[in-house]
Image (cartoon, rainbow, N blue to C red; front, side, top):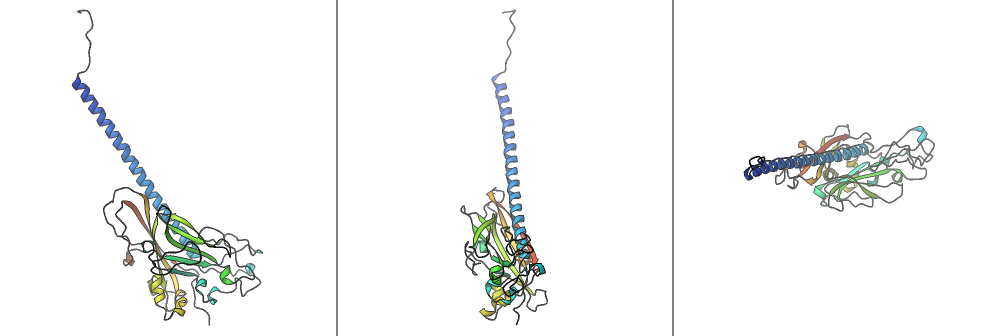
Length: 315
């Protein structure tokens, strides 16, 4: 025994201390990993919300700027001036011939040419908007679009065809809010790809839960709006139902607001209440109080003056 090497080891206390330190290191690494994962997911959600709002705003801006467009280029005039592009759309007094029209707090059918009616309990009191304009065809062709004028789905719209009425020849684009099959709100586009085909609706941007529109009303025709009002208030300005379309033709601009939410609740603001203003604080009477569900929300607001302002019906 005297010449045999003495064995060395650790005590039980030392082993327990080493295990405790290792456990602390593992827990710290796990917490850091989970924290970075939550941060990544929150950043991805924020990016998705911003992209959804950016795309929805781009499409709405593009279509509204086309409202009332009529091409008077000599190489695109059709033979029948009474039913073609040379006939001003303002010469018709029907609701279908308005360049811009909408409804307040409404639900919109995904088929048909309806844009809804006022106070129909729209999703989060959202509004609807319908825009009409002429397309443009390639020189020498009635049916082949040149790609400069598109509807809300991005389909190029050709110009009018000889023998067709003005109302039939103009393109359609509708915007409204509806729920998808999983109850997630979306901004929808309703369109008619063919001149006399059926109407269809497709989602444009997911997570858009509020869509509000107010209109710049120019009562005296000097090009400067006196007041902003929603669709219901604007129509209430008409002295009679027969004069409602005249009030729509006094619209020279639009202010549009949208609220988008993230797909997931992250818990950062869960349980806290907030009040959002889709049209900005200048329109504080239009507010949205979302549920305290912990979702990230963003607001986009923009103002557009009509390039082709509607005018009164010629006498």
